[in-house]
Image 1: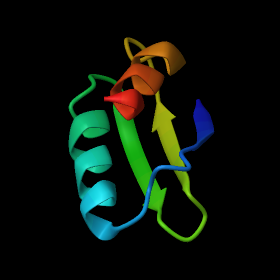
Image 2: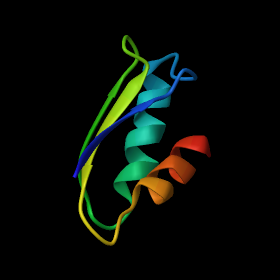
Image 3: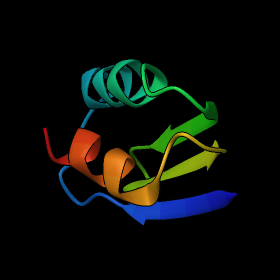
Length: 60
C-alpha cells in the first residue's frame, strides 16, 4: 500500500532525516519519500506496518 501523509511541521532536511529514520524502523515499510517543499511524506508499506503505526511515528 502507498499512502501520502501531510506533515506541515517539516521545515528542514534534519526533519526529513528524522522522519526517514523513525518510519524506516517500522517493520513492513519498504519506501519513504519525505519532502520539505511539499510538506508531505510518501510511504509504501505492507503488513505488519499500518497507517496508524506510521502516523504515530510521524507525530513523535
